[in-house]
Amino acid sequence: VLKNLGVEPFVSIGRLPLFDRVWSLRWAGPVLIFSVSMAAAFSFEVLSSVLAKMVTNVTDGSVAKRVRYLRSYTRPGTVLFSICALLVLSYTVLVLFPAIELATGAEQIFNARMAPFVTPSVLYSTLFTLCVIITGALLFILKGRDAKARYSLVAGVAALTVLELWWAVPRGWGAQWLGVKWIPAAVGLVAVVLFFIRYFKTAAALTLLFTALFLYLDSASVRGLPERQDPFQPAPYVEFIKERAPGARTLGTYGTLFPNSASALKLYDVHYVNSLVASEYHDFRYAYLHAELFKEGPNSELWFSGRPERSVEREAALGPGAIYNKISRPVENDIAYRLKSYSLLGVKYIVLPADKSLTKGGFSRFVNRDKGPLFRVVYDKEVRIYENPYALNRAYVVHSTVKAESYEEAQRKANSKDFDIRSTAVVETELNFLPPLSEAALGIEQTKGMGQTSRATATITEYGMNFVRIEAESEEPGLLVLTDTYYPGWRVSVNGTDAKVKRVNGLVRGVEIGTGNSTVIFRYCPLSFSLGLLLFALSALLCVLLYMAAHRREKRTEESGNP
Image 1 (spheres, helix red, strand yellow):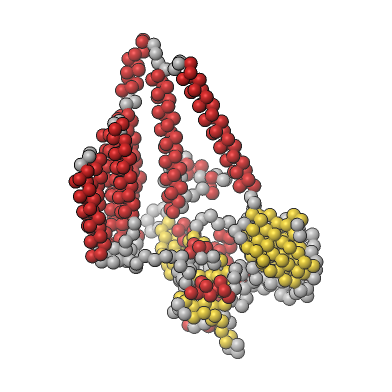
Image 2 (image 1 turned 90 degrees about the horizontal axis):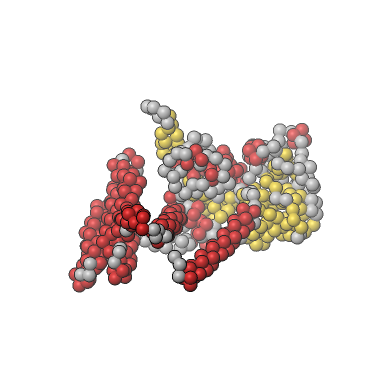
């Protein structure tokens, strides 16, 4: 968290190996909240236990003043007030002030359609959460020491939680109506306070008023967003792709198929929307899946989503640093100029909006004068789907290889103009069956037609997140290539015998196979997971032992009657 906030020395520590892998995404809020809440709970428990021992263990009358002094600063009211004040102050500085700054510059940051929603959505929500925190803090301070009010306190906190969640639920209201939510929200806050101080009838009446106000405003409001619907309800074209070619790779463009939605729909899209991507694939995307190479901003680098927008860096006019401009360029350009790279990944279906085309306008290079369009339209309804005839199979066998010294060099060779990716692969380690071809034998890396004298097939028979089974048949030894990203932790066996996973073409996985039939099984079982599981088991066992020891010690103390 401190690294994200730019606090030294945590920023510098974050640049060190291992620590540079840690970056909390904006949608990782529940993880952060849980971690911080648990840390706070443990800390509070430890402090309470230590202070209690300090008070009870002092029995000498000569230090009576010290005991009274300590007790005066450890009263529940004082502790609660300090904690609540720190919470309110932290939220104000870390959340409210940035929200005010964001709302002030909304017109410069967001487009004309989004800017009106920033103040009511971001700033008002932040202010309301602060109101909820302050109300809850007052309840704790006023009644936290009263044992009789314990159940009322729990009920009040639960009511505040429901009220805060109600505010956060999107209703699709227009920007001009979002501010009206303050009316039922204020009524709800007053109802919670009245309930807590035992004005039950008035609190119940205000609760009914809150419900009536909300229902009325919800029915009368101007809608600014579409009605909510299930985002994972498969569209007709999704079922079409699954039925036509199960397991085929897709390329969703212009928002027709976002990568996170594709994963939920069990489609295999080559895009991604996060930073947790193997560096080889990230470099491959930047160098070989875009028509133009730009120095991108962080948000653009992490969002390879198929949208036409990209954040491009330009020099600042005044002072040091960089400014990022958002540009828009046709996604079709990437396909046109990087078709070989997309084919190497096995992209079989290209999904475009119904009003886009790969054969019209400036994309006439996809049309052969004698044979017509190179890409066949296989679906033309709510979206338009083209079939890529050059896509490699998800698994295939080659019988010739080229040696590279690094994955960067391997990617460069595999994506060079004259390299035949169907018959030859680039490897970085020596193979037992296939000695790498020399540059002299290849000419200018020209391998077209080589390695095609032998017949070989490879079929994926079982596919999961951490398990892949492939049945292969080859007339001579070869290299089985699976066009899935290479990553440490993957293990492979051929006919039940462990083998070594090879990084192929600087990006994907491969393994050597012999003549005849081969059953190849890839399993993802990283050492880090096994060690983490072992450490978890040891930690859990240690916690149990410590609890048992503390319980026995407390029991012996009670039996002996000594503090």
